[in-house]
Image (cartoon, rainbow, N blue to C red; front, side, top):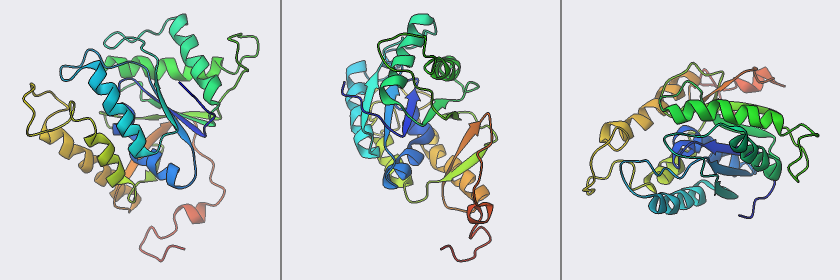
Length: 245
């Protein structure tokens, strides 16, 4: 896998979690010239629908739609995501290769146990990646911050990102996962995420968060520290309907 330095590195417990939780933000940042890569921690081999090979193909297509510089898989075990030292070092190496300024990780309180494990594994490994005496054959690197996205549960966000202009791109990326999400022509058994209600809920969540931000669609993130605003006036410009410049 040809991994290049990027501004943002997004970790996904399974193929499609990143696309679901923060795909609109990644697409919006790509349009602004920010580079990003995606690391799938597992192959999604325990999923009821599809196969790991199908999901790999779907994930590549979704990454292309979002504008990712690369997408790689660490294969740490779906349904029993490993968090031992060996797994931790795999994440350390991924961070050191990509050298991101910002890391996106799943919320530790999210619905799937693999998400909770990933939510602990990724920030811890990101910290260890900055230790000069931890030798992996790659130079040390510690990102400026790790922030968390939720794929399923709702958590009060630390901040919101306006994804109004990139929401259609997010939906297009999610539709690349034909084996996983709603497809009225599918003959596979219905699951929690494959129902029409779940897919409709993706838009409902983004609309609800958008109403908080007074935009059409938004995605929410949780950070252990609040972001520092250089210009709070600009941050709220147009909130009450005034002209944005």
